[in-house]
Length: 588
Ligand code: PEP
Ligand code: MG
Image (cartoon, rainbow, N blue to C red; front, top):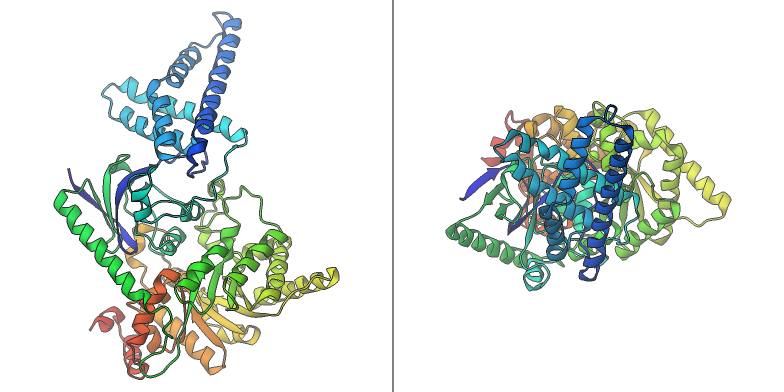
C-alpha cells in the first residue's frame, strides 16, 4: 500500500529505487561494497565469527557443568542454550549470505542488515516470551561483530566503489536496480564513505537541513530528505521508494501512476541539468557588468575535479575535518595531510584553494564511538578553533602541512569559529611558530593569505578586530544562523525556526559585507545561503561578490547571476533588510 513520509528537503531531485535499511547497531560498523571476487572470503569471515562465538559459549557451558548443580546459575544455562540456538538459526545465516552475495555488502553490514530484518519479525510476534528473544539475538550479533572487529578485515573498501549513475546501476549485473539508503541517523563520516558508492538517494529520521550530514548529502548531488522522523521504522528492506528531494517527501510502495509521474519529473530534472551544463564556461557577470566569483566548497581533495567541472574559479572552503573523521582516533600525520592538501591544490590547476583548519565537534564527531562521549552542549563546546588551540601539537601539524602545500599553488588559510581577540592572537602566533618550525627543518613552504570565518555573532559585531588581523573574511551562515537564533542546526524539531531570512541574520551578513568593502578586504559567504538560488539576488543586492557553495549548485547560481541587474537589486535589498518580515518582502 502506498504511503508517504514527510521530512526536510535537503538535496534536490528525484530518486527511485529499492530501500536499503541501515540498521543502527550498538557496535560501530563499517559499511562498504565488496568486489564479487571477495564474496567467499566475506562469508568466511562471518562464519569464523559465528564459530568463535559458538566455541566461546561451549566453553562457558563446560565451566558451568564443572560447577555442580547447586552453584550453576540456571538462568545463565538457559540463556546460553538460547544463544546457541539463535547462532545456528538458518534465517540468520542464509540472510547474511544473501546480503553479501546479492548486494555485495561487507560482512559487518550484511550481519547488521539481517539482524534488523529478524528484529522486526520478533517485534511482530504475539508471544511475549518470543518477542523478548530479540534482545538475545542482538547480543549474539554484537558478539560476532566484536569478534570480527578484533580480527583485522582482510577486505579494504575497494577503490573502485565510485558512485555510479542510475544508468550504470541499471546496466550493472551485480546490482540491478538503484538503491536508496534509509537510516535513523548517518554521521558525516558515514556519508563520506557513501560519497564514493552507489546510492541514488538518502533519507534519515533525524537531522536538520543544515546539519553536516545534510551538507555532505547535498555535495553528493543526489536527492536527500532528513528529519523524516520514523522513516526507518516504516520502510522494510527492499521496499520500492521514491525520494522527492525538492518537496522533502519519501513515497513508499508507489502505485504505477505515481511511479510514472515521478519518472517524468526525474527526466525533467536531467534535462534541466543538461541545459545548465552549457553555462560552465560562461563568465559569471551580471547584466550590469558586475563580475561575480563563484567558488566551490569541498570535503575531500578529489572533489576538486567536480569543482572544476562545474566551472568554479577556485575553492572557497575545503572542510579539512573530513580528513580527520572515522579514523578511530588515529589522526592523519603531517605528511598525509600535506599530500591531501597538495592534491587539492594541484587538482584545482592553479586556481586558489581556501583550506579551513579542522572544525570537529558538535555534529561532526571524529568518529561514531566518540558520540557517546559528547558533551552536554557540543555546539557550544570544544569545537573548531577551540579544539585546535586546546591541542597545539595537532594544530601545528595541520598548519605545517597547509603551509607546505602552499608551495604548490595559491592557498588561503581559513580559521573557523573565532570570537575573541585573544584567540586570534594565539592562532596567529601558532601560525608563526609553524613557519619557524619549517624554517628550522629547512622544509619549503609557500605564502598564504589569512582569513577568518564569521560565524559567531560576537565576531560579526566586532569586525574591526578581525579586519585588523586578517586578509579576508568568509561568512559561515550555517553557524551564524544557529548561534544568532539559538537554534541547533542539526535538530529537526526546531528546524522551522532556523531562518536565514531573520532580520538579525540579514543585518549581521550585510554589515560584514559592507565593513569589508569599506576596508578594501575581500569577503565571501560559504554557508548554505550562498548556494540557495532563492537568495542569490538578495545577496547580490547586499553587495556580495564572492559566493562559495557545493559544485552541484554553482551552475544554477550562475544562471541567477546572469539574469540579475545589481543596480536595481541594491535598493530592493535595502528594503528587504529593513522589513519586519524579509521573507514576505522577498516574495512580493
Ligand atoms: C558555516 O557555518 O556556514 C560553514 C560554512 O561551516 P560549517 O557548515 O562547516 O560549520
Ligand atoms: Mg561553521
